[in-house]
Length: 314
Image 1 (cartoon, rainbow, N blue to C red):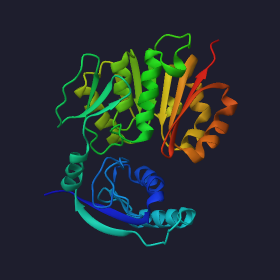
Image 2 (cartoon, helix red, strand yellow; image 1 turned 120 degrees about the horizontal axis):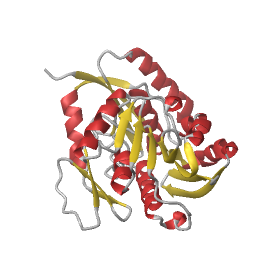
Image 3 (cartoon, rainbow, N blue to C red; image 1 turned 45 degrees about the vertical axis):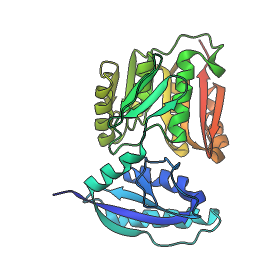
Image 4 (cartoon, one colour; image 1 turned 45 degrees about the horizontal axis):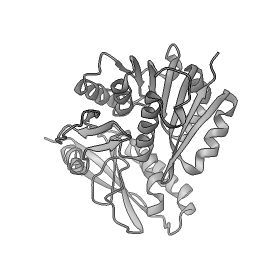
């Protein structure tokens, strides 16, 4: 018998979808869907232009459902008035089979090229790779991240530029990063990309044990388990420093962890921050100002931005 999950639906203006989806992913630890199409967590390309969207989050059996409903309602009341056309409606609840939710969205996840060499291909799709393509085979499962959303896409683009010494990193007098720390690895896509690009050791951490399991399966699919080491180790417990640190998490968490993240960057190493709404860009830059890091690049796509910083050589 299929496990029955709980689907919580919220109706919000289109302009609020990204903010609410970001919040619901963090709260549930799972993907979300928009309207009646099950999609990648934040892939909005196939959604029509209706001014009101229904954002749905999925919660495992036996969670504290009443508490989650109160938390979601409070979030809507606190942030909804910032968006034109918002009218508060209480979230609705529906039981759903896990198998239905887990499989329906797959038809919207197709191979996608990111940067000049990286191609992300779902396990159930065929792809004819070119001679220079680095193909990442991925099954996101219940973890965040297929690479389609701008936060992950820009992170991958910056990652590739750093390894290939391109763009803003062309004149950086340093070798390609040998060691990488991926904070909040999700599906493992950033860690796998780093391994494919030539990293010798990648430490990937996530507070969600289910995400670590998915990421480990994806690393195995890509023959990267000898390079990518996954765990639920807290950031403060990670030992050593890394030539590249990646953190694709919420802006508020980035700032809260600013000192710890900067401390994990080796001299002449890079820190790439994503998951940042453009309106929070200055907030994040100010939060990292005391860390004595040089701003290398800010990429923006839609409502999102990605910030690349560098620690000065000793």
